[in-house]
Length: 251
Image (cartoon, rainbow, N blue to C red):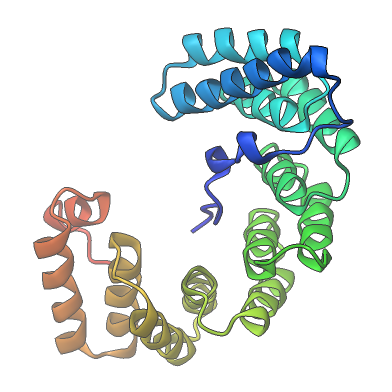
């Protein structure tokens, strides 16, 4: 379960600060650049990468000194699989606004997805420690995902626990830690974490699939069957429900 816990495409380009105050004569270009960067992200969400690239290239021409524009360019070029170019744009965004924890977090996601786990974890923890970052649990949980991707399970567990220390009812960290506990054979711990998760979050195909497997591992077939029924009823088109229909045991 290595899904990133922040919607990377949700960067608020319009709210990004400029590297320096714009002169009055520059204001129209500044505004146009931000608008085109916003449009690039919107087209990216719609999987229209051709138009997204057109818009972000125009934004970069209009105002390459806007860190939000540079960050959006990183997102676009990552989707285009031009990873070195994406890296340069992410790095430039941080050079322009080095203390913005949201940008640090997004660059960290990119580094971890690229397999640069040590750099990604370092950036996540930098974001989490920032006094201006209002959701350190997100960065710690993302760092845990990164550590797990690097097969460093003890460190992943420590980071998920840091996320829960920052916010004890953070659903994503509860689910990630439950999955990690199940993977190392700690079924009772996984059950307890899932109980906490279901108390604060709406069930998802991933959480129901995990709960089903946890209960089967603990021998509670009645509870497992309840989760199986809920998964099939509420999420019939999910990959997990299809696995059940295809005869997967959930083990």
